Amino acid sequence: MRRTLDRFETRLQAELHEEFDPQVVDTPPPHRARYGRLREPRRRAVPLRTATLVTAVFAVGVLVGLLYDAQHAVLPSPGRILGVVPSPTPASQTAATTTSLPQTASPATRASAPASSRPRPTTPRSTASASAPPALSDDFSGDPVGAGPPAGWSVDDGAWAGVVNDGGHVVRHNGGQPLAHLVTGSPRWTDYSVSADVSTALLDIGFAGVAARYQDPGDDYECGVGGVGAQLQLWVTQAGSRRLLAASTASLDLSTRHRVTLQARGSVLTCSLDGTPALQAADTTFAAGRVALVASDGEVAEFGAVRVTS
Amino acid sequence: MGEGLTGLCPGSPEDFDRLYLETHPRLVRTLTAVLGDAAAAEDCVQEAFVRAWKAWPRWRPEAPVEAWMYRIALNVAFSARRKSRLRQMTERLLRPSQGSPDLRISASPLRQALARLPPREAAAVMLRHYHGYSRAETAAMLGLTERAVSLRLERARNFLLEELGERWGEGWSLHPTASSAVPVDEKDFG
Image (cartoon, rainbow over all chains, first blue to last red; front, side, top):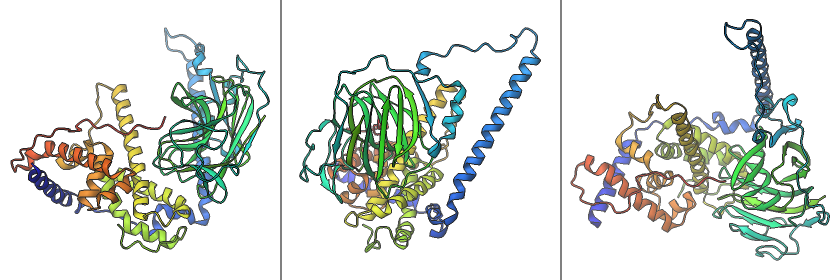
């Protein structure tokens, strides 16, 4: 049997070369390769052109919609109902509304939820007002290198490399490690901001960021870097199912650390990048919970200077 | 691994150009086998170089650069294949009567068989049996242990033998014991 397998592998190698060697691969010279555009000084014009195009398409869509409505209102075909009776919006569709703030506003998000149709944010039904004001400051400087988990934190799932020294103490999640949550704080914390310096190479298409109103690994709000192109993203995770509330259109520069902040105030969630509010959404799924650092399966990520303020 | 790629300096544009020229054709061929589509493979490789360029200043020279580049490209490809499968399933659900055209209908039996393998197994076959990387190098590129690579190669070989053995007509007598005929993509995040 061994000889059969060896013979087959030899044949397989020959067939692979016969199949793929003739494949013509066009390798453009480096100065014409797409990655090279990142170095061109005129690259700032691209997002502007894109934004103009998206705005124009959106405007044309609105005009077409208005004309279509007008035609149907004035010239109904025989037997058809004149006008359109809006159906009531299901409660599940109003549980979350999203807004992109000016700096990284997403045209797609704006187009799908015009301001006039957005439900007003509502106050969560239950609050844990008896808890002490949320407050935390941890730069892991008191933890020795290799400490895992750091003092005051607990690993709820997955695995972490622990505290490492990378220009200062940070908590590291390695590429070979599974989705992981590192948790601290009180389950009675309601309205607060949690922030951390996040650094990731984002080799996979996963996620690295902070979580607020954390219940368990499958229930929380998360703000961080994720997706192909490394955008800022705001998620709600409920019963293990993730739903994107808002995302930036621009890619983040992953060569530097970013300050990621998630503020939960009433039903309004605000995701900030380097101190600038960038994404906002309204959601009433969770009213209170702990804070967590989140790194998804296969991602290299480092977290430092964690702050929680009320 | 990558004998021509020594002495690279993180963040150096010239060194990144060297990495690009050295690895681009190999990456395209590998991803063609994983995705079953040369055009999709070229798109994924371009996306991988964009992401690699962003991360280039943070590349650590102690990590083999070719394995680093392969990991980025393969992760982009695995993601693309997941999305493609999801899109095909959605199209079938929305338009069950029409069915989606199979773009691989004209591909060779070997390419069709590779495209039906789980993506990490297809990648392992290409890295080991086409490019000739060692098991340790293949493991580094896939982010797996050597034992996991051996298991995937064995499963892939049994599947390919079952699919192609008769066609290649040399009286292959092995009856595979643990074929992975049903592709199972890796669990996505979330």
